[in-house]
Length: 462
Ligand code: PFF
Image 1 (cartoon, protein in one colour):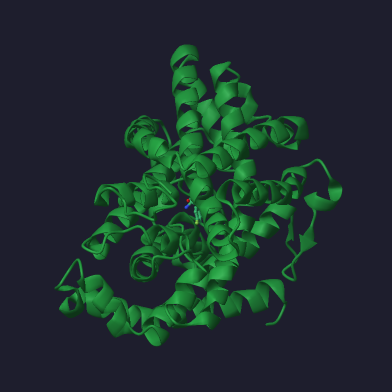
Image 2 (cartoon, rainbow, N blue to C red):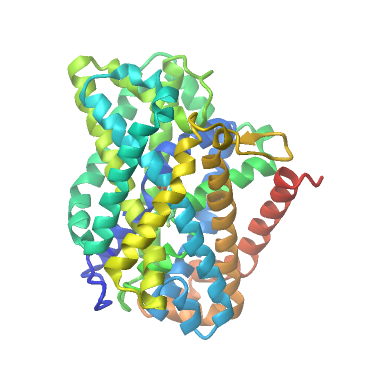
């Protein structure tokens, strides 16, 4: 846990410490790697509009609920429900532990790609973008990079030295933001960029389907690290006097803001380079960006390209740390396993779980074409895990956390928890909206989208 000693379960040294750690968890591959390709696959502006609506109208209340549950109970994702007097609801925390493990298993593989690309950029190999498919099917390289990445994550979580990465993130995260802004500025001056901007910003409402809404919803939860109790765990370290609504707004704006400008940069580059035909998917940033860096010239391109992928790897690391923290905190607190042992066991098991995701990118036929949905779409192992964990489990977790907070723990108690640091909360518009959203809006909307899409896409029920 960033900046806090695990054993004492002390608080964050200050409010900024918590916001930084939570924003560090939120900002990662989800914003820069996943968001642009989801937008491309989801038809552009309509996806962006839905994503923004989900973040501000639905995820904002859910995020406050997670943080409030954590602060109230001072526990991990599973223990929180138990110690709040609702043992049965700890199943939601257990689902979160499973989601964390599944997500980290493939996230670590993609983080390995980012790491590998940093090295390719340092050596000036801009052609790697065209050879992306080959790159990801080379399991030797991927095994090496993803092992290094998991090792770093394990080391940080084990030593509880996240204080160090928290300090580093104060410099590195703004650097990443600055770099993306500069690249966005450059991209927007290129010929054809405005067509990309139009695709990105002008919604074509005929593109809105339940399936697109389902991915936009999954993307919102994934990007905000929501629905699996990561923020329950982090919330347990927030001081009683802190204003949760205010911190939540800062985390949300940082995360959505970075995704938004990363998207703008990407679509300006895609269209100005005439790459709009390139199939989207997981390879989008890895195929498009190297040639964009090359256009900056051999020296500048190398420097900027390497800096970009190094900073992206760092952003991924602050996210993998929080992904590993959820199952580790559970095992340590609830099963009384020593922390160092728990970290190695859990981290090692998740690494192994990620091997099929690594091999399903062209190495082993069985994992390449792992499953065919009733819609006719065939997915590899990594896509399957992503559909299951981030598109399905996270929103489902968010839905259950909403129902729990609004109906079981109850809106009034939730408000009381927030009022400790913000006496006006209960009577404010935000307070009233939040409780309304947790009780009605989130369960109904998330429930409807999930049921329709799952029955249609995965089960073939019309
Ligand atoms: N929010 C992270 C990203 O966008 O890259 C991914 C993530 C981290 C999801 C932690 C869930 C989580 F608990």
